[in-house]
Image (cartoon, rainbow, N blue to C red):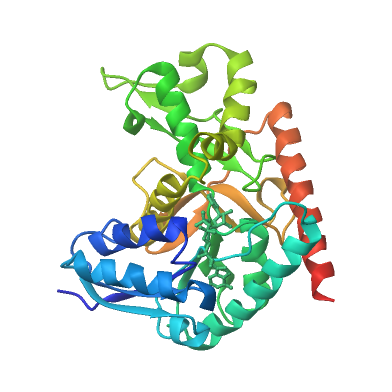
Length: 332
Ligand code: NAI
């Protein structure tokens, strides 16, 4: 068997953490032949609860789980990790200004960036889940200059999967037969779920475009988009809790595809550092369609962008530019 991979989960005592750590320990993240050592970080008020999660991991007797580090010490948490899933953050509480929330998260991500840079394994891959996910990832990148920018990403795979799910329900086809939706931009309500290049594989084996099969542009340009954009809020309304199960599952999909590769002919959405592709301003953490091979993602090039989509791509870029400015104003 291969050497265990060390996986850090921050905010591990929280809701997503509780759904995510058993998935990792079961091999959902890296496959059922890959042993793992879990590193779990949370803050001192959650230390007892974090220890409870550790007790449950022991009790679950996962064969792939070769060790658990549960700590409130950032350095101990980051030491030697090969994969870092950053779920910990400061939530927006009632009556708080956007700037106050941003400021809290900027200081968390600045500190954790330094700890990862100094103590993580070489070539550590980082996924930021905590909101504002794109901007937290950008701050992490800025304050960990020796970590290659290709190794830092944020989660929009949940939005991507939500889009696949909506198309599958609408067309009454298996979700596994739907592919190549795209989430552009911010993991926020300005994201643009784009189906212009998405296809469905029919029982005959033929691939057809989603637009053609749905044959309802009003739905695709209206309710479909707003349902995906607002899905997080809809789950909170229904459960009185956030979408932890689907977020944890999407985080595993994101890392697994990044490490093990995307299937031939299929792309996924990842928030990555923009190189100016599709005229998205360089230097933003922006969600693009990507394929992965040999542990590296690359942005799918050459997709046609119609006028309607162009506006949507620009709108979410503008929001990210503003968020970036707000984050920087918190630093000074
Ligand atoms: P939660 O509040 O249940 O858990 C967050 C955990 O982070 C808590 O245990 C808290 O003590 C911990 N934490 C706070 N500051 C920390 C620090 N400095 N270091 C380490 N841990 C720290 O929240 P939940 O539901 O698990 O969500 C976590 C984050 O994920 C939130 O920011 C949420 O908005 C975001 N989210 C992102 C999604 C995405 O698709 N990108 C989807 C769903 C949620």
